[in-house]
Image 1: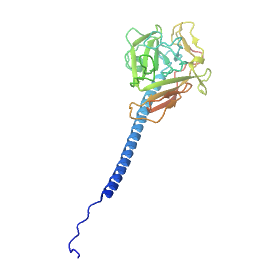
Image 2: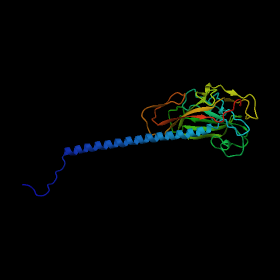
Image 3: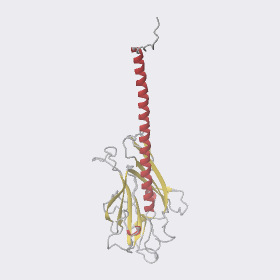
Image 4: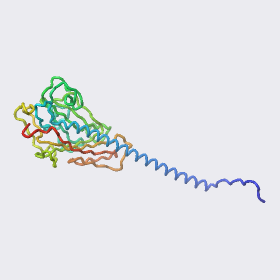
Length: 305
């Protein structure tokens, strides 16, 4: 006997419920993995973007500053040697006599230090020539003498000096301005950017002129010295000051890092900056190397000091 009404649908069996549950779990896991993968990719891209932006800003700032090497603030004087003497020891600002080029032969993470010379004349203006590397005004009482702007990276370390422990993002690009005549700092050390972990610098080989094809470390350049104080066509300088001669350009590489721990990359990564040994990191943080060559427009004329 058949019913003339709609028949009531039967309920799902236990087996069908179990199959539906398993399918739901699988779909949920797939969706979750897709979301996790998408989030990781987004974090990696964001971290790499942070590192690239940090590197570009720092390199742009360095380029602008280093191009001031050899500048003389008096139109009646010729330009002067723009790269300061090499350090006899690893003096670090604000220590006295740290106004020098340091070549990192020990292979530390911080890398090299570059120091540029410029002849300061107090004209009461407000442009960069009247300021320290940090933009602060040069104190009164300083006039017609060389200033040295020093640029370096101070890598984070724990109390024992271990550079691979306790990284709280305090890896800094820093600068300080010195009086060359006294070897003393003007003002204080200034932090320009954080997240910069290393810097390497190469210089044009002697005799390269305007067509440099070879760059060498500062340790291979023999320093020149001024034997007498000079005036007139050449800016006055100190008789006991040495400098690196005939440098027409410098090549710089910096290593910048991301600021987010979430932006992880897989495995250990190694980075090579110019002539330095590889730097190996196992913290999975994205990093970016940026390299550029900076021509020094204020190079000395032939025969000048």
